[in-house]
Length: 135
Image (cartoon, rainbow, N blue to C red; front, side, top):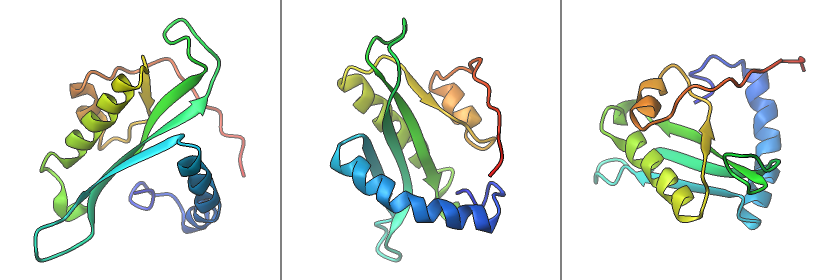
């Protein structure tokens, strides 16, 4: 996913080194949940699409008094499986999981490819901004 978005190989390698311990801990303490759709077509096996929800500590606010934020992330569909509704199904599943667990607001960062999907599901742009401080 990140390679398709144009991130350089060295930043992807650095991310991979840090990702395994992060996800092992997040799965262990139930702060990350992920769903997959298997190709299951009898010809190819493996993951066709996936999406996750990360629960991060965050200060309580007026939209949600719980001290956490839910972020939908890692939404990705393999090229040959796109335009079949898989990403929509996964994001809807993530939203339903959040709703079922009492989460009032869900956040995400959208690539140019996912923007129309997220808008069709009711996501709206916010006033969030970012300052990159370098490596």
